[in-house]
Length: 81
Image (cartoon, rainbow, N blue to C red; front, side):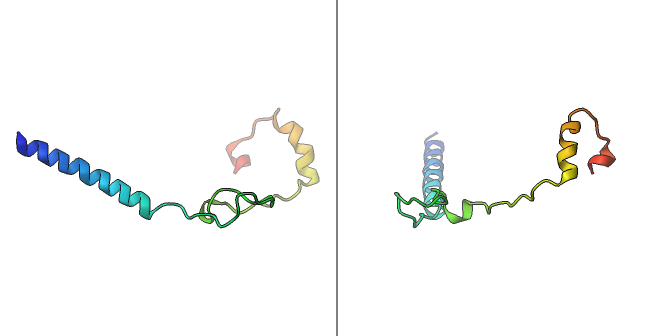
């Protein structure tokens, strides 16, 4: 009975220590931008968590005219693909 308690305690301490070590060594990088920066791109996320901006092309004339009708018609699977 005493050996089971010691083994459980050792497992719990090992898991806590491993979690602490993993959290310290895989923490997100600190941002180098000042806190009161006025640039529009100053977010609090580190560089590897930011996504690049997506440039959507302006809709063509065919897409503009098809937009209201899209809610009224049902497309087949072949048309969607």
